[in-house]
Every structure is written in structure tokens, then in C-alpha cells.
Length: 176
Image (tube, rainbow, N blue to C red; front, side):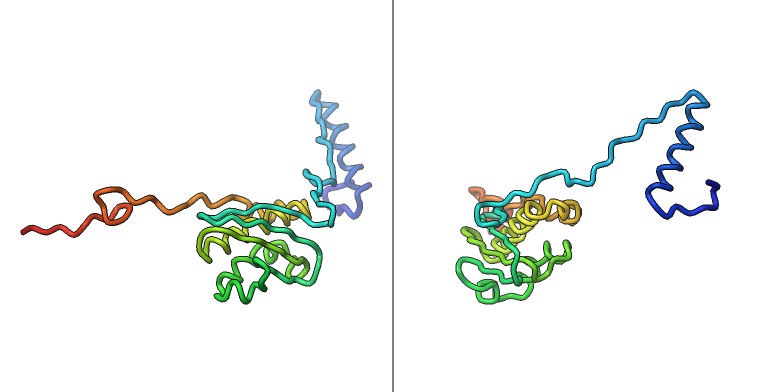
């Protein structure tokens, strides 16, 4: 095959690799090809009901999340997401992992959240959905990880110190 030919199948690619290897052997070099595997790096992790489970954390909030194939219904603490997370920005945060993976309205989510405020809880549910999605579809792990959704956001509120009004804020200075 010459440089102007196009590769149209895997067998053509194999022939090109063979000619390159033959040419390299003639020059005294050895080329070893890495084994190619189409299988994902991880296995699918499902429970007895066919759901993927994960725990998500953000600030003081901890979310337990189960996902299964469905119509896109998200239930948080027994209530619909529109009722529990009234602000649209919080609902956007929850749906980010599905948007990145291209799986909008394909999975039903059941989550229980404790601790923290609504913003922290939404972040915890997002973290849990991301973890569960990568367990249900290991092929999506790369996309979700590249978006940074699998990493727990470790920022928490700094504690209040004695002799201060807040964590760093001093009391108002009075000259007299």
C-alpha cells in the first residue's frame, strides 16, 4: 500500500502494521504492539434489583443514590425533584452528569439526603449520581471523570475561632 491509499477496514490496517513491522525488523529494531481490549476497565456493579448504588458527599450533606433505567424521574427523600429542589439552578446541578453522558431522561433516580443545606444536598446528589452512573455504565466513566463530577468537593466551612466574630472576621475596632 502506498501513502495515498486510504484504510477502509481493519484488515487493511493490519496489513499496514505488518509492512511497518517487517521494515523495522530489517533495520534491527523490534516493535511490540500493546494488546487492544474493547472491554471497559471496570465491571458493571448492580444490586439484586438491577440498580446501581453510590454515596455522594458535599459540605455536610451525604446522599445515598440508586439509579435504574427509566423515564428520568428523580425522587429525593420521597418527594419529586421539583418539590424538594425548588430552585431551577439546583435541578440543573443534579442533571449535569446525565447531560455530560448524553443520557437525559433515561434513568430513574431515588436519593435520600441528610445534613447540610439545599445547595450542599444538590451537590451531594450530583456526586452520587455521577458515581452510580459510572457503576451502571462503566464506558461513561471517562466522560463523567473528565467533567470533574467523580471528585468529591472537599471545601467545607471554616470553623469560628475564639476572639473573632467569624472564622477570620475580627470584631469592629474602637479607638476610644
